[in-house]
Length: 340
Image (tube, rainbow, N blue to C red; front, side):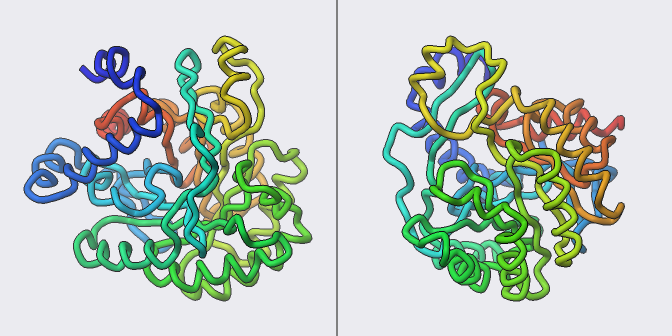
């Protein structure tokens, strides 16, 4: 039914409006008594459990940051069978993000371009919601992704990240430092090892016992990727997330005029399958076996998840294919993984 609904209804709606409408449904599915019925249909098999970051993940497949920016849909996403939810990106200062429209579908490519710009309610609001989730959904594994506030100069980024980490880390199962979104001016420059090292050091100190990971871009060179991976190990991080959206537009099937009209922003979805596996192999080749590597990018099917796990991913995340696969996407993947 969902492909028909998408083709005839959802694909004709503004993408951001459709996302918010979907989130409303997800929130309902996470509320009692609906969550009981939902979980009965979608709960991952116990055999899919993964031990990582000192936690037990019910499934290796979770939701990437960007889907639930304000930690409002965690209970519903957990009920739908996702093994974890990474909320955010959260910034210390609340912000509206970039002007609309800022989210665009590339349907022939099963992809999306976004230039959201870290629109979120701020770290304080996120912390209040996470505290409530700890009371009402203690079983959910929740990561928190933090980024730089737009109004803060790049030179003052460390203090800004530390402010978010101090508020959020005690309430999250793990913390992810986002230095790789293409939609905040100057942010990707923080991936240079000489600027990233002091940032990670300061955020790790602020995070305390909460495992810390860093999320990087697919547009880095291979040398930069391995350099950051080695840095993450040297600084005592718990893991690395590969990867964020790309600014590239190569090999797309969508009409070039449509792509051009969408404009700037990060591309996500099926076109990133190959680069995702390349980055995963690069990172895994230089980090210890116990180091957590979360693979993101181009994930649609159980086979996609399986390929990443076989290539050394500890966990796998998805986002864009939710739009094309529908609310039972995690159930579909978890069932496909059971025979692994």
